Every structure is written in structure tokens, then in C-alpha cells.
Image 1 (cartoon, helix red, strand yellow):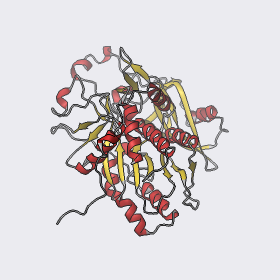
Image 2 (image 1 turned 60 degrees about the vertical axis):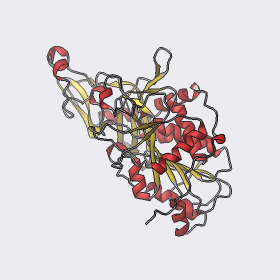
Image 3 (image 1 turned 45 degrees about the horizontal axis):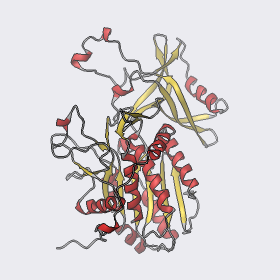
Image 4 (image 1 turned 30 degrees about the vertical axis):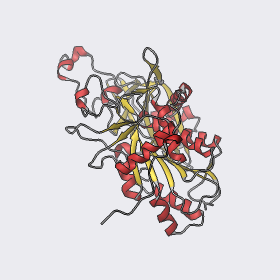
Length: 447
């Protein structure tokens, strides 16, 4: 039996393609500002929302009734944000074009009883979130940031963006074999940061310090979601400053690009699709939460948008059938010191343009039809792109792409920017690639 025809994904005529882009370093400067201002998922969505507000978008509350008015809207829930723009003339069954990303990064997160210490050192008890490169957190000046929940039910963001904590490494004199046998770190015993001196460790000291820092009356904080971050700012690197080093590129680089693309297309008008940014939390530990890609947030927002415009379940089914999602997440650039770890015929390079991620075991959601959608967007934008597959001898990571495709029945394509040092406290990409990704995403959302 033949497969039912899907909406055409054919590339536009070559005459529609734009001339090759001239790199705008101002875009990368803005990414650096965004990274530095977003030490946690909660800060990241607050900063994205601020940018959307400046572009005319308005927050809608999930507890309110929604209308189908033209314009930009967004929903905030914890560390996730869903934003969309309804253009003039949009029908209830108008399909969506979605850029998917995630706001969380592997790091160290504060435990429910944070105050600990031994041998005259005051320490903060932390838990390992996701799969970080643990050694990258050693001997690094760390700040503390996150969300404080108050007695009245409200929340407050806090960011101590100065050297406050440090995970000290054991001196080589006390571990002579470390360079020969490799560094072995116990997640419980070796990763607890120090933040002061004193034999008298008292429950409540850390939270009292944060209350004072945030100007909150003593005893008002009853819950917290706190995590450490490197206070070293993003920076250009290299002889010609052609590289960018910074924290949380996986995956705030895509959140920034998606926000920029959505605000750009919202200003252009005449859109045949409803453009959407979906930035989820908890990708690094499986996406199974009310703010993760495996939760109901995206589907609920899209359905309510259809129904708010007078649509029926049939309209919802038609809209979803014509919808495409680009799941944008970082991927692996070929490593000059470990080239044998990569597929021998697929060596994505930094500043070579965004990567199209493929895995036949569906760790990525891309298929041939999806490839043509992305190729058309890149051709329209004048952006080169590369293909990525894992070495057959290496396990392949995954993204929100397969989850989005399976949960919502939405055609999904996995893409991203190639970086080095993924899951390190400080990652590395090409200075041009964020700009190229944003232009490709803009062309995709324009349809």
C-alpha cells in the first residue's frame, strides 16, 4: 500500500535562494549576553520572554480563557516557554512551524538540606543533574542561581553571579597516579563545593544568605530550585576570534536562535504557517515532567490555539498533520584530537553551518522527507548545512525530536550547531554558526 501524500516539502526554485550571508558579529555578541544572563532555565525563559515582549508578544495565563486574536503570545511554565504568532487570515486548521529546543544544561544542583561541611570547611550539598563532564567543574569559580519559592506561593529569581563556591581538586602530591591512570571522581564524595570556613554548620545558613541577597524577609523562603554555574563570562577565542567559548550552549544557543527567528518572522507578515518556539526543561534527564517535551505542555498550547480560533477536533487534526518541527540542539563537531571517535565520512566542522542529525534507530527523528524541509530552508536563507551521524561503534545520544514526533504525531527534523566539549561547564563553537542557525530557522518559520 502506498503512503498517503504529505504536504509538499519540495525546495523552492533556486531563484528564490538568497545570496550567501555576511556574518553579523553583533548577533554572536547578543548570544554572549543571553548566555551570561541565563544561568538557569528559569532565567533563560525570563530573558526570552523579555525579548518577546519587546517584539510585541504578550503573556497568556494557562488559567485564563484564550481568544483567537492576531498577534504574538507566549506561555511560561517553570523553566519552559511556548511562544507563537497568529498571522492575519490564519484559519483554525492552519499548520504550525515549530522550533523546538531545551533550556536546561547538565550541572550541580542544591539538595533539600544544603548546609554541610567537614574538617573546618563549610560546604553546600549538591546533586548531579544530567550527564555533566564532572572534571570540568573542578577548580572553577562558581556562582549560585535559581528560583526561590515563597510562603505566599510566589516565586523569585536569584542570581549570585560572583565567585561563591568551588569544587577543589586533590593535589597531585596526594594522588601521584592521576595523570597515568586517569581522574576518578565519586559523585557523592568528591563533588561537594566549599563556600567558607567554620566548624559550626547550621541548617538554614545558605537559604538565609540567599534571602538576604534577594532582599526577601527572613524565613519567607519555603522551597528552592538552585544550581551552580561558572561565573567566567562567554568570550571570543582564537587568533582571529573565530571561536566562541561559553557556558550552556547546549542548549541555550538554540533557545536564543529560536527567539530571534520568531521575533523576526512575526515582524515580516504574510505567513502561511503559525510560527512557534517551544523551549522545554528537563531534556538532560529524559524530558518527563510537566515542563518537559514528554509532557502535555506543547500539545495543550497548540490545541488551545486551534480551539481559540473557532476550530474543531477536525481542524486540530488537519493542523497537526501539516505541522513540521525543527528540533534544534547542539551536536558534535569533529574533534582534532579524537577524530577516530567520529564517523569517518561525516566530520561536521565548526563554522560550516548547522548540522542535520540522522540516526536510523530513531535516536534522532530526521528522515528523507524532513531533510528536504531543512534543505529548502537553508537554500532560501543562503546557509550551508552539514550532516551528522554517529560512529557505528559509539552509542548515539538523543533529543526532544523523537519525543515530539511520537507524542504529537508531528513530522520532526533534528538539527543544531556543531560544538566541542559538549556537557562541559564551558563549551566551544564557531563564532559564525549561531548566526547561520538563526537565519536557517527564520527561513523555516517563514515557510
